[in-house]
Length: 208
Image (cartoon, rainbow, N blue to C red; front, side, top):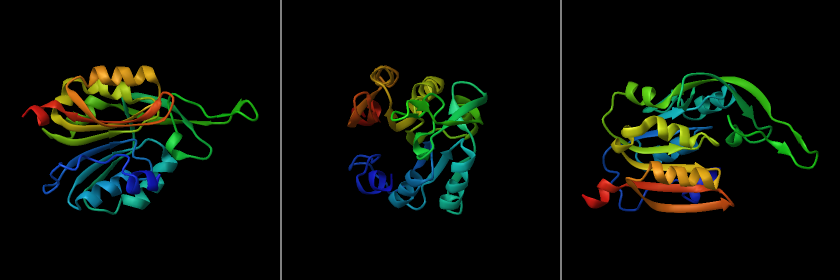
């Protein structure tokens, strides 16, 4: 994960992005904080809001980045409603904890994920609580909830310059393209069939 984000620039911004001023970054599915660290490497004064629902992962997130000025940790996930939901906890990889998917051991042909209850909040409401009129970067890696989050944000997407996210099915990728019709793709990588990372830039930054 460290290599993919910090060395291979999986979530990088375009080279022409001006990072002289502080950026406001939303890291949804912050995991243990590697992308938040990347955001601080870009500019130490960047403001980063980390959203992470898993209690165990939250402990690591707080240890890794909780002491860094300008990083704010929100101990819940985002979606298109509010409530308590089951999170499927991957036995080996915190980056694959998911509300949608369960880990299956193909050798033994059985589900081995643990399930815990976590808090989910409405993405649009939490966006409004930040009381900002502009977001530079929205990064989403939520193992299958990306579409729900984007649909919840609705017209608020116009306030975002860059959206960087993972997709976990070809159907989701097509839905994401439709939702982000006001954006252009500036980066795409596929980790397999129906799985990868897409990076979008708001059309107003190009047309303007």
